[in-house]
Image (tube, rainbow, N blue to C red; front, side, top):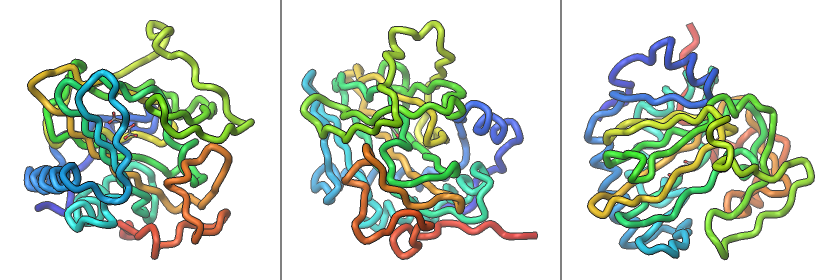
Length: 275
Ligand SMILES: O=C(O)CCC(=O)C(=O)O
């Protein structure tokens, strides 16, 4: 399994990440990585690790969610810490070092119409700083019909923060943060927005900034799953910061606010070599 990306990132890809807040990265991973994840995901579906939070799927099917999987399954840990991802994140974030913040599973089984509502991630996260991002990988071919992610290009530079909300009816009610605005109905305004999406092949990665607004439709395919797995990385400008609206499930009592991430909790996944 490759620990370095199979090819270097192009200048265009680096520019896109900074300009658009999202970029598709293909051809970076050996197939063995996705095989390893496929095994680990099956285990988690059969016997979920403690972060399990299956989303309600009232229209049928199953939307399996879990987070911090790397803490209980060595296969996820290898992917998060020893694959090419940490080096890719360091390069995209212009970070000298990157911490593994957490990982998260989003599996929409065939015929699971549950959407992932529009949101951006950072208001949910107990961290402050600009060097924050996710690398979302698919294990299945993905099209719009099977729940491709959509992104609003450039929204990470809007300087707007949207109130966290639950992904499914009956879910957790997030504390209201007076500094945040309610998330607009972006679907009602699709024509006016610069929305981008891609059809994907297994092993393709979507790299996106923690303030880039994104969401996805349900998986309407009857014959195909949509296994998505995302890893969140934090660069060295990031400090711990618990605020109203941050997700209590991601918040630790043993980490003080206002200080850099403790590497014994959020391990350093990559340090850039200084020339
Ligand atoms: O896979 C999905 O539907 C949602 C992914 C997502 O919101 C994320 O990775 O931040």
